[in-house]
Amino acid sequence: MAEEKKKGLGRGLSALLGDQAASAIAAVTSAAAAGPEGAAAIKGLRTLAVEHLQPGKFQPRRTFDEDRIADLVESVREKGILQPLLVRPLPGQPGRYEIIAGERRWRAAQGAKLHEVPVIVRDLSDREALEVALVENLQRQDLSPLEEADGYRRLMEDFSHTQEELAKAVGKSRSHVANMIRLLALPDPVKTMLEKGELTAGHARALLTAADPLRLSRDVVARALNVRQTEKLVNDEGKAKPSLGGRPAKDAARDPDIAALERDLTNQLGCKVTVRSFGKGGELTIAYGSLEQLDDVLARLSRAPARGNATLDD
Image 1 (cartoon, rainbow, N blue to C red):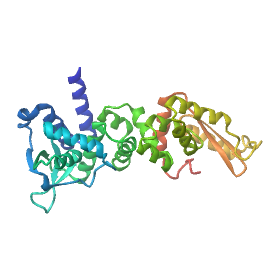
Image 2: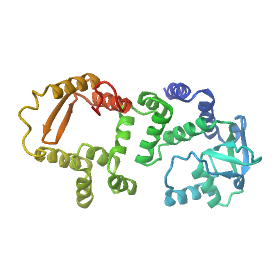
Image 3: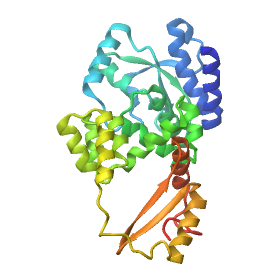
Image 4: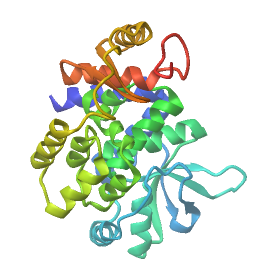
C-alpha cells in the first residue's frame, strides 16, 4: 500500500513539474531513504565544502526558527546530515553552488562545525528551481501556515497550476490547499499573530468569515479561546451583526440592474448570489451547499478576470 502511494505521488510530481524537476526531488528523497551505502548510487550525489554553497534566491521560508535550528544542529552532530541538499551550479562561478532545497540543513552543518555536506547536483532552470524549492518545502510539512499558503499561491499564480494538481503533488486534499490559500486574505495584524504562534491555522480559518476578524482575533488571544470557541464567537457575531446603514432599500430586489447582476454572478459562480443595497453600500451573499462547492467558488474567483461580461467589478 505504501509503495502504491509512493508511485502515485511520483506521477503527480512529474505531471506538475516535469520529469527533470520531479526526478531531482525524488533523488533527494531516495538518497535519504537508502542511507549512506545505498545513496552512493544516486546520480549527482557528492560532498561539497560548506563554504562553496550559498542560500538560494527562491527560498520560500520567510524566517528560520532559531530553536529548531539549534535542535537540528544537535541532531547533525550526533547523526550527520541524513538527507542531502539539492543544489545547482552557479553560472559564471566555477566551484560554487546555489541551494535549492536544504538551507536549514546547511545552516545546521555550520553550527555543528562540519566542513562538508552531502549534496545532489542538478542543472535546473530558474523556473524549475523555484518550483522544486516550493514543492520540496511543502512536502516536508514544516513550513508555517502562511509560508505554506504563499507557496501554493506562488505555484498557482506564477506557473498556472491548479489546486487539484498541487494537492496531488504534495499529498494533500484540494480542500486543504483551498483553505490554506484563504488565509492570505486575513488582515496583516492577524497574519502577524498567526506567524507568532498566537493563533493556529484553525483559529485563522474560523476568523476568515468574521465581519471584523482583527477585533475578534484580539479577543481570541486575550481569552485564550480554542478553535471551537472561536467558531462560536464568529457565529455569534454574525447573528448580532446590524444592518449596514439601516434597512435594505425596498426597491433593491426590483432594480433590473441588480437582478441582472445577481443572475450573472449566480451563473458565473454556480451558487445562488444575492445582492442587497444599503444606501451607498450594500451586501453580497453567496450561498453554498457544501465545502466542496465553496472550494469550487474560491477556485472560480481566483481565476476570474479583472473585467469582462458580468465580472465582480461591474
